[in-house]
Image (cartoon, rainbow over all chains, first blue to last red; front, side, top):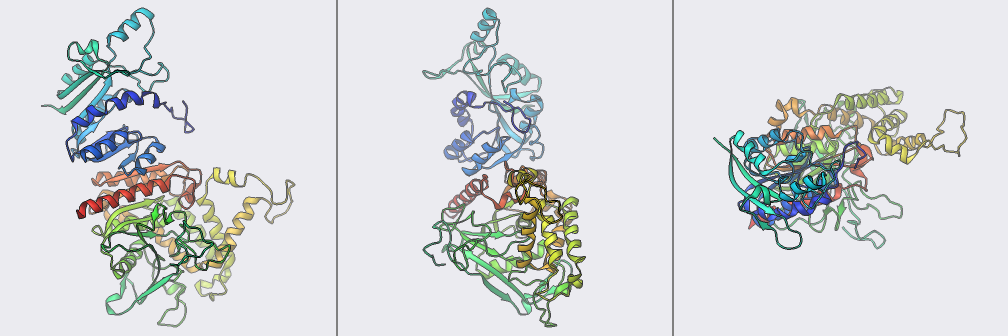
Length: 217
Length: 390
């Protein structure tokens, strides 16, 4: 887990499946030819799809040098930077859509990141794992242990997600920050059959949530 | 370009350095220092074919000790070393000569065919020496622009270069925004750091304190050899990294493991530096070294344009900045400063800090991801050009 530079290195492969499962839903939210920023774009899997299917003008930010090199080798426009530091220098409103695919819970200051994202972009899409899913609740109740499953594939000491959130918590935050929820989607990721969209009791029944936000007021 | 059977297929093969002289009243070069220079000869090489649309030209800018011979072979004799960026330029390579028309010229004030301090001053019939006017990176770029115009190219698909070459790339994007589609500054900086200036100054002092230097009045065959060799040795240390030296030489002795108790080279790292120094004096001119390092020292986009954001505001290029983790002469932080300025100016920019222990020299060496990254960027530019044409 420790890299040569003394920084913690995560095994992102484990959550790759979960993260890629959400790509179609993010793709739907991008308009053709829009300017799109993917924060923590990895090897550029999503950006590539966005570019091919929606002809977006893409920009990615990614910290891992090898991943950045992979992105650039495919002709994607990506900057190697820490996304908590790297956003300050972007001009306001220079993107139509900012993607925070599973990154909000991994950063030190999620509020600042969310606000930055909505400063430089018109809309931000925020997918995250929902910790209030009934299985997690039961698991904690009956075994007394934190869950390790397909949507939360890490043990407590190795997870890149340093925070936990539920759909209700997130909605409350949006209210507090006066962020307008443009659209939302609740899903039960299903690895054997199709993913199921959840409409009733989403906080209890969905494993991941995906919010598209806009600066309110 | 012809192909000799024993030259590798991945090479452009046999090439020739060509030259063009800009003379006449309309070709008086006005330098940043206020001085003028006339006439100006430019030595250059080209590889690949210019497309009928003239939209596939890539200009390569060389660094301090480079020249126009960036790829291929001059004689094809066994043992001949190819051009200095052979690993990047050739059929199927990142600067793919099957797709791109690659141009490389010796910059203004060089000593490899382009007018410089070692050339004969037409006014006196003697070498310019210290009578040569001071020139800057901006002046070098001005002369490259003349060459590109002369070759009938209105728009460059990309301008690419490392170190001092990277400075030229930045200046190109700023001076001629309409002409540069993609700019690829590698292992470079927007302004020379005091540390880098300091190393240049020590190198210059090494040359000037050699009695043979004689205030620049040495005869071409009587160079201040020990001074120039020392300058090169100092510079070469700054091109490597601690790890690269450890890997290359460790503490190995030249003669086995016994200490020699002598002042002549005893460690392999010493003989390596001596070799670098002594081969350099055979191919480089001491006065030219003084001038080029000065041109580097004076490079400062912050000073020239107020700040980096202002400097990059007029640019229309897409940028790909590349740095190397172990480069301490032009450290990653200086490339990151560039990227920051470009972002503040709202420009399209990509950046990769490539993992390498090869130090500043990494941009001239295989074994890192620079080629992949450059190739991806150029392919993207090529696609964008085609879409724009449609």
